[in-house]
Length: 443
Image: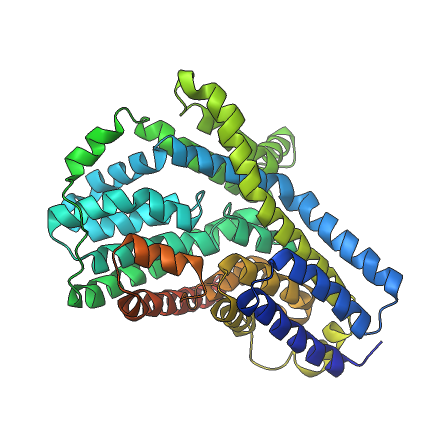
C-alpha cells in the first residue's frame, strides 16, 4: 500500500471530487460515493478483490444496523405530515407561549416537528400557519421565516431519528440514546440563537406574508385534527424507549441485569422503538382513510427512504475502505497530538455542506471519514455525531434545496435570503459547535 501521508492526500482529493461531482455536476451522491470508494481503494494499493469486499461489507453492515430504522422513521414522519399532527403540535406550542410570541412559538414548533419530519417538508407544512401568524401579529416574514427555519434545521441535523444523525450514530458506533439526548440539548441553544438572529436582523426587512387568511380561518379550513396527546405520542414514544435502553445499559445498571434490563433493551432497540412509533402514528389516521395510509402513505414513505438508504449504505462502503487504509496509523503517529479535537469533524462537515449543499450527504461522508479515527483521536462517538450535525448547517445557500424552500415559500428575495437566512445558518452552526464542545467537557 501507499504511505500514510499519501493516503491522506488521496483522501483530500477524494473529498474534492465528491464536492465537485455532487455539487457542480449534480451526480447522485450514491453513485459518487461508491465510485470514489472503489477509486480510493485501488489508488492506495488495496488488492482489487479486497476493495470489492470492503465496499460490499461496508454497505451491508451499515444498513444492517440502520436500514429498518430509517424506513420506519420516514414512514412515521410522512403519516404525521398527512394527518395534520404536525399542525396540532404547533397549536399546542402556540397555546403554551401565546400568539404574541409567534416567532418563539414557530421556532419551538420547528424544533419539535423536525425530529421525525424532514426540515424541507416541515417548512412546507408549517408555512401556511407561519404566514397566518405573521399577518395576524403584523410581524415581518423575515423574522417568522428564519425563526421557523432555524428551529427545524437544528433538530434535523442533530437529533435522530432524522436520517442524517441516525446514520452518523450508526457509522460511529455511538449509543443512539446518547446521540438523541446530546442532540436535543445542543439543539436548544442553537435553535434559540436562530430565533435571536431572526429577531435582530429580520425586522430590518419588511417582508409581507402575502396572505389575507387569519389564523382562525386557517385552522377552520383543516377541519377535524388529531388530539394533542395522540399527535405527540408517535414522536415521544420511540425517543423515550431508546433513552430508557441507554439508561438500562449504563455501567451502574440502574435496572439490574435481569428481566427488566432485557425488556428495556428489547423495546428500546431502535428498530423496535421506531416500529412502535409507526404503529402509534396509525392511530392518528381516521378509520375511513386507514387503507389509504397503509397502502399509499406507507408506500410513499418507503420510496422517500430509499434514497437515504442508498446514500447511507454508500457512505458505509467509503468508510470501510478508509478504515483499511494506512491513514489511521499515520494520524495516530503524527497528528493525534495536534489540538484539533472536535473541530476536525466540525470543519470537515462544514466544508462539505458549504461546497455541495446537502446536510445529509455532509453528515454521512464526514462520519465515514471520522469512523476509523475515533479511537486514535480519543473522541466520544455520541458527541462527535452531534458536532458533525452542527457542521452540516454551515452554511445553507443557493446549492441547498432547503435555501430555496425557505426563501420561495416566505416571499423572500434571494439577496435578502443570503443576508438573513444564510447568515443565520452560520450563527446556528457555530453556536451548536460551541455548546457541543462545552457538553464534551462535562460528560
